[in-house]
Length: 105
Length: 170
Image 1 (tube, rainbow over the protein chains, first blue to last red):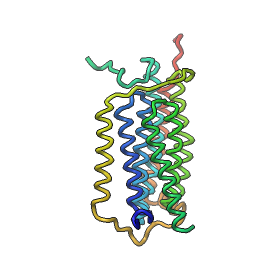
Image 2: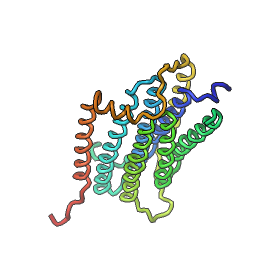
Image 3: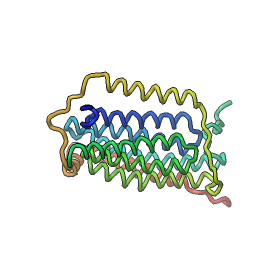
Image 4: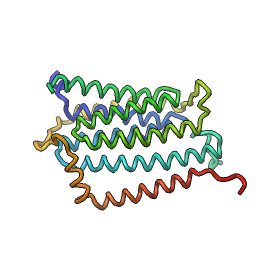
């Protein structure tokens, strides 16, 4: 009971594990490229929660700075990925990731 | 704020984050996923406040909710006929995906809870850390900061170049 009521590092790690699992599930199973991107964002958020949790309980600033850079990279990644998805839609008329198999013999 | 209130609010935000993340993944409707992702991002921002990273929380709201989510919604609207109700997205590899989901979460929880108890340091981060972030950005992390700004500029120019619509007559 004591462990449930005092919020510690384990609670944050648990939330982060759930977010990572759901993100991985979305990346693996969804056919829509946009939902795959949402899964990647979930994974990045899970990593960020871990960085900030370890940074808080360690007392250093490294995790906080890394989380900031992760957010910046996520923004760049989302912009590029959306541009690619829009190009795929222009060529294939769908964003179904399993139908994009031009390179397959 | 008493300890009980703190705990209850933490569990509330944790539940919002995890449940809306599950809804993002398990609903078939792309628009529902996108709007559910909004709650996930807000819940994560609230957790960042609990982790005394208030600046990161504000950045999360501004960048993720104001930028990435709007971008994703634009993507959904560009690439789906939104007026059709019942816009569904198919799933594939559902069995391996579910197995991986359960195995991943189970393995991580097992590892987290059965290894040694974590020992928090005495110098835990307390209160606001905005000033320290500014100090660190301009001292130890000034080179990564500049590099990431150039990367962001290049990525945005590249994205605008990739996504532009060609004139059909040319």
